[in-house]
Image (cartoon, rainbow, N blue to C red; front, side, top):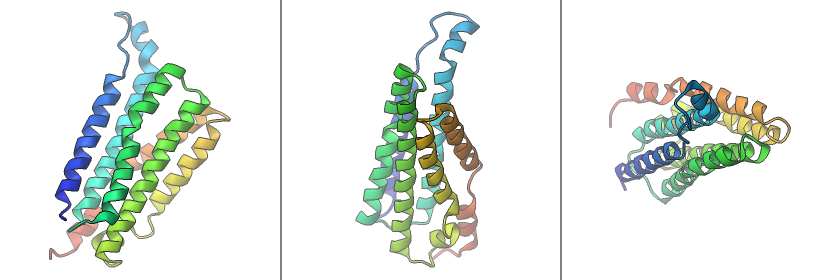
Amino acid sequence: MKSDRLNALTDGVVAIAITIVVLELPVPETQSLAGIRAVAPLLLAYLLSFINIGIFWNNHHHMMMTAEHVDGRVMWPNLGLLFFISLMPFVIRWIDQAGFGSWPVAAYGVVLFGAAISYSVLERAIVAIHGHDSTLARAVGEDWKGKLSAAGYLAAIGLSFVQPYVAIAIYVLIAAVWFIPDTRIERQVMHDPKP
Protein backbone atom coordinates (compact mmCIF):
# COMPACT_ATOMS: atom_id res chain seq x y z
CA MET A 1 0.00 0.00 0.00
CA LYS A 2 1.21 3.52 -0.74
CA SER A 3 1.89 5.82 2.19
CA ASP A 4 -0.57 8.53 1.07
CA ARG A 5 -3.54 7.05 2.96
CA LEU A 6 -1.47 6.71 6.12
CA ASN A 7 -0.39 10.34 5.80
CA ALA A 8 -4.00 11.47 5.30
CA LEU A 9 -5.13 9.61 8.43
CA THR A 10 -2.26 11.04 10.44
CA ASP A 11 -2.96 14.59 9.21
CA GLY A 12 -6.62 14.22 10.19
CA VAL A 13 -5.93 12.92 13.70
CA VAL A 14 -3.31 15.61 14.32
CA ALA A 15 -5.71 18.35 13.18
CA ILE A 16 -8.46 17.01 15.43
CA ALA A 17 -6.13 16.67 18.45
CA ILE A 18 -4.92 20.25 18.07
CA THR A 19 -8.49 21.49 17.70
CA ILE A 20 -9.71 19.61 20.78
CA VAL A 21 -6.79 20.92 22.86
CA VAL A 22 -7.61 24.53 21.97
CA LEU A 23 -11.33 23.99 22.61
CA GLU A 24 -10.48 22.88 26.15
CA LEU A 25 -8.79 26.21 26.95
CA PRO A 26 -10.71 28.31 29.44
CA VAL A 27 -11.72 31.82 28.44
CA PRO A 28 -10.49 34.57 30.81
CA GLU A 29 -13.27 35.50 33.22
CA THR A 30 -12.48 39.21 33.16
CA GLN A 31 -11.54 41.79 30.55
CA SER A 32 -8.20 42.55 32.13
CA LEU A 33 -4.63 41.45 32.32
CA ALA A 34 -5.52 39.67 35.56
CA GLY A 35 -7.98 37.49 33.63
CA ILE A 36 -5.27 36.49 31.16
CA ARG A 37 -2.79 35.94 33.98
CA ALA A 38 -5.24 33.52 35.61
CA VAL A 39 -5.31 31.27 32.53
CA ALA A 40 -1.66 31.83 31.52
CA PRO A 41 -0.32 28.53 32.95
CA LEU A 42 -2.85 26.55 30.95
CA LEU A 43 -2.12 28.64 27.84
CA LEU A 44 1.54 27.70 28.25
CA ALA A 45 0.60 24.03 28.67
CA TYR A 46 -1.44 24.32 25.46
CA LEU A 47 1.51 25.92 23.68
CA LEU A 48 3.80 23.10 24.80
CA SER A 49 1.24 20.52 23.64
CA PHE A 50 0.76 22.26 20.29
CA ILE A 51 4.53 22.31 19.79
CA ASN A 52 4.88 18.63 20.77
CA ILE A 53 2.08 17.55 18.44
CA GLY A 54 3.65 19.67 15.71
CA ILE A 55 7.06 18.10 16.28
CA PHE A 56 5.67 14.58 15.94
CA TRP A 57 3.65 15.56 12.86
CA ASN A 58 6.60 17.35 11.22
CA ASN A 59 8.99 14.46 11.81
CA HIS A 60 6.35 11.94 10.73
CA HIS A 61 5.94 13.87 7.47
CA HIS A 62 9.68 13.80 6.81
CA MET A 63 9.95 10.12 7.72
CA MET A 64 7.08 9.20 5.40
CA MET A 65 8.83 11.02 2.52
CA THR A 66 11.26 8.10 2.56
CA ALA A 67 8.60 5.36 2.49
CA GLU A 68 7.73 4.07 -0.96
CA HIS A 69 5.13 1.72 0.50
CA VAL A 70 3.81 0.56 3.88
CA ASP A 71 2.28 -2.58 5.35
CA GLY A 72 0.92 -3.76 8.69
CA ARG A 73 4.33 -3.42 10.30
CA VAL A 74 4.05 0.33 9.69
CA MET A 75 0.31 0.81 10.13
CA TRP A 76 0.11 -0.50 13.71
CA PRO A 77 2.92 1.64 15.18
CA ASN A 78 1.45 4.60 13.30
CA LEU A 79 -1.86 3.94 15.06
CA GLY A 80 0.06 3.77 18.35
CA LEU A 81 1.55 7.19 17.66
CA LEU A 82 -1.90 8.57 16.82
CA PHE A 83 -3.32 7.03 20.00
CA PHE A 84 -0.84 8.89 22.17
CA ILE A 85 -1.25 12.14 20.23
CA SER A 86 -5.03 11.83 20.70
CA LEU A 87 -4.48 11.63 24.49
CA MET A 88 -2.95 15.13 24.60
CA PRO A 89 -6.36 16.83 25.06
CA PHE A 90 -7.13 14.47 27.95
CA VAL A 91 -3.97 15.29 29.90
CA ILE A 92 -4.34 19.01 29.23
CA ARG A 93 -7.92 18.86 30.55
CA TRP A 94 -6.65 16.97 33.62
CA ILE A 95 -3.99 19.62 34.21
CA ASP A 96 -6.68 22.29 33.85
CA GLN A 97 -8.91 20.65 36.45
CA ALA A 98 -6.31 19.32 38.90
CA GLY A 99 -3.44 21.77 38.42
CA PHE A 100 0.22 21.01 37.82
CA GLY A 101 0.34 18.23 40.37
CA SER A 102 2.42 15.09 40.25
CA TRP A 103 -0.11 12.76 38.62
CA PRO A 104 -1.26 15.04 35.76
CA VAL A 105 2.32 16.07 35.00
CA ALA A 106 3.43 12.43 35.06
CA ALA A 107 0.52 11.51 32.78
CA TYR A 108 1.67 14.18 30.33
CA GLY A 109 5.10 12.51 30.33
CA VAL A 110 3.57 9.06 29.82
CA VAL A 111 1.77 10.39 26.73
CA LEU A 112 4.99 11.93 25.38
CA PHE A 113 6.97 8.77 26.17
CA GLY A 114 4.34 6.58 24.50
CA ALA A 115 4.36 8.79 21.41
CA ALA A 116 8.16 8.72 21.29
CA ILE A 117 8.30 4.93 21.57
CA SER A 118 5.56 4.51 18.95
CA TYR A 119 7.44 6.87 16.64
CA SER A 120 10.64 4.89 17.17
CA VAL A 121 8.90 1.57 16.43
CA LEU A 122 7.35 3.16 13.33
CA GLU A 123 10.76 4.35 12.20
CA ARG A 124 12.23 0.88 12.66
CA ALA A 125 9.31 -0.70 10.77
CA ILE A 126 9.92 1.57 7.77
CA VAL A 127 13.61 0.70 7.87
CA ALA A 128 12.74 -3.02 8.04
CA ILE A 129 10.58 -2.73 4.92
CA HIS A 130 13.01 -0.62 2.89
CA GLY A 131 16.30 -2.07 4.14
CA HIS A 132 19.17 -1.00 6.37
CA ASP A 133 20.72 0.87 3.47
CA SER A 134 17.51 2.87 2.84
CA THR A 135 17.31 6.64 2.93
CA LEU A 136 15.67 6.61 6.36
CA ALA A 137 18.19 4.17 7.85
CA ARG A 138 21.12 6.26 6.64
CA ALA A 139 19.48 9.49 7.81
CA VAL A 140 18.69 8.51 11.39
CA GLY A 141 21.52 6.08 12.07
CA GLU A 142 21.29 4.94 15.68
CA ASP A 143 18.80 7.78 16.42
CA TRP A 144 20.47 8.95 19.61
CA LYS A 145 18.31 12.06 19.63
CA GLY A 146 15.17 9.92 19.82
CA LYS A 147 16.62 7.56 22.43
CA LEU A 148 17.80 10.42 24.66
CA SER A 149 14.40 12.10 24.35
CA ALA A 150 12.60 8.93 25.46
CA ALA A 151 15.01 8.61 28.40
CA GLY A 152 14.34 12.25 29.27
CA TYR A 153 10.59 11.62 29.29
CA LEU A 154 11.07 8.63 31.62
CA ALA A 155 13.23 10.70 33.96
CA ALA A 156 10.64 13.48 33.95
CA ILE A 157 7.84 11.04 34.77
CA GLY A 158 9.74 9.96 37.89
CA LEU A 159 10.70 13.51 38.79
CA SER A 160 7.09 14.67 38.53
CA PHE A 161 6.50 12.91 41.87
CA VAL A 162 9.38 14.82 43.44
CA GLN A 163 9.02 18.23 41.79
CA PRO A 164 6.48 18.60 38.96
CA TYR A 165 8.02 21.83 37.68
CA VAL A 166 11.36 20.11 37.11
CA ALA A 167 9.53 17.52 35.01
CA ILE A 168 7.82 20.30 33.05
CA ALA A 169 11.22 21.93 32.48
CA ILE A 170 12.49 18.64 31.01
CA TYR A 171 9.46 18.44 28.70
CA VAL A 172 10.16 22.01 27.57
CA LEU A 173 13.86 21.27 27.06
CA ILE A 174 13.16 18.21 24.92
CA ALA A 175 10.64 20.16 22.86
CA ALA A 176 13.21 22.93 22.39
CA VAL A 177 15.78 20.42 21.13
CA TRP A 178 13.26 19.05 18.59
CA PHE A 179 11.78 22.47 17.76
CA ILE A 180 14.83 23.17 15.65
CA PRO A 181 13.92 21.13 12.59
CA ASP A 182 15.70 17.80 12.34
CA THR A 183 17.24 18.03 8.89
CA ARG A 184 18.82 14.55 8.82
CA ILE A 185 16.06 13.08 6.67
CA GLU A 186 15.75 16.09 4.35
CA ARG A 187 19.50 16.12 3.74
CA GLN A 188 19.52 12.40 2.99
CA VAL A 189 16.49 12.63 0.68
CA MET A 190 18.18 15.44 -1.29
CA HIS A 191 21.42 13.44 -1.42
CA ASP A 192 19.86 10.16 -2.62
CA PRO A 193 19.08 9.82 -6.30
CA LYS A 194 15.42 9.35 -7.21
CA PRO A 195 14.53 5.72 -8.09
